[in-house]
Image 1 (cartoon, rainbow, N blue to C red):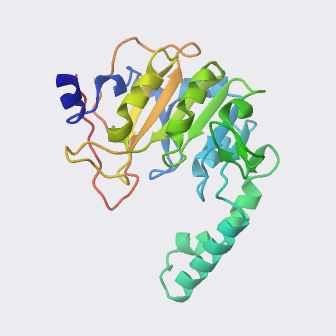
Image 2 (cartoon, helix red, strand yellow; image 1 turned 180 degrees about the horizontal axis):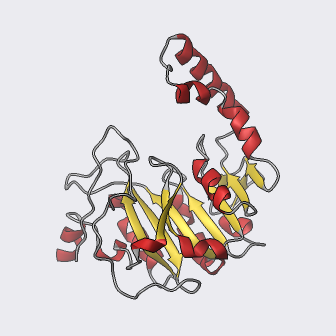
Length: 268
């Protein structure tokens, strides 16, 4: 009972990152939502970046490609289809006509589809398929199916709550995954699923960040977290837990600039 009470007041100890020297940690992607922390030592051990969940933001993938130009990138998101782009373009045009989009960056967003077409070509592909645990039709795909012919994988997961349905699939294929970044939603409701996933897993947490878009629970703990996990069979880490304070100044940034950053507290 004491354990359960503590879970409701701070994050459990099993979410605490393993110690990694700050000099090894770098940010890939923007200094806002969509940027993630990785261990730079893993970059030379990656053959392919697999992105699950894309929406209209591929700045992480763009930044990754600049660091590793010849790395294959494949993305999966069933929501980014023709209807998505038509609705987005109409919305952006209306906003522009009503003078809601006056900043250069916002005006350029109207041409996001062009950027999408230029980016996803050659060794970069986007598949309009939904990530599922059990495939029912050709519009769906599983992690096992994606990784069937790949090794040395960097896997990025942001599928808005559906991640819990595929945690076991990720675990089964973890030997192929050198690095994993995953966004976990509503962790206060799914903490036991997360614990089960992390048990007896070669992928170890080396960084954690609270996504302030998700807000906090009644104890001021985050509802949404971003985890960076390194395959310790590929790159060694110290077998001690981190003493860093999270967020890390100069490395972590707010997902939503108009909200306060969320400080992370651990149970031990």
